[in-house]
Length: 108
Image (cartoon, rainbow, N blue to C red; front, side, top):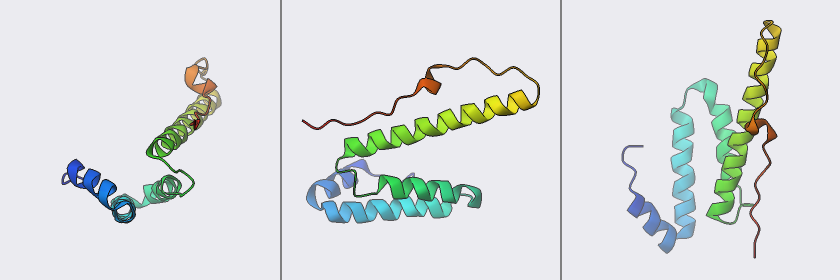
């Protein structure tokens, strides 16, 4: 995405939110299409989730993305721990990530 122009996207969001959303979705879909086949399903699910109309604000979308990333990290840590146990290696002690609490946006 070397041709990303922040000012263009900012102006588009301010002047034509519907066109901004359309172009944003198209740009995200282009990234999914360009990704290796093995990664497309996961990226598609992420795009669908982040483009869902249930997230009304940019902050809500950002918090949702952060929660998805943390959930994935916890799953990866658990998988690594299970794999190490299967190899007879003691798994590392749980850390703060494994006590992850979902963030929520509270509206005034």
